[in-house]
Length: 147
Image (tube, rainbow, N blue to C red; front, side, top):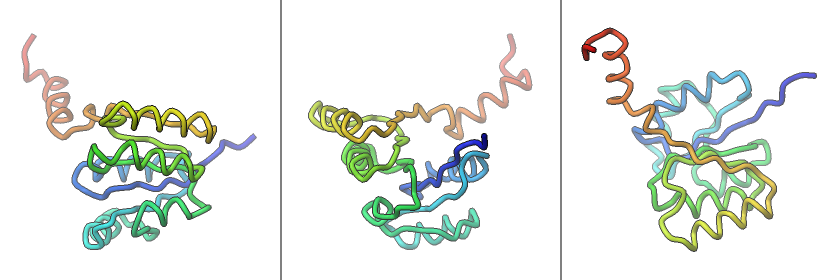
């Protein structure tokens, strides 16, 4: 039986997402990436940098795209819960940078959207991929920190 693949929309093309775009694009179970950002210049730059031709101008456009199975949210932290809830209600699986939400009600709404949609929501602790953390791990492996 062949592996199930997904088409992934990456929401937010700012500096933080730039480390994740090539990771998702290279994943063997991702059969396509669609970049999404409301800032047209930022979207065009990211698409050109990563050689990705499929783009969306808004989360609403991405959610309306029936070829997209899941979204990864790399937007401002106060947008995570409302965007995840909207994507879940549109039938998309969601991978989200931290935090889940800002208010208790946002989290209640998000849990409800997961339960009613039947889709997967994943909260990702992404600090593991911060450039400074990558740098420190590399220096540690080379013995630069001593015992």
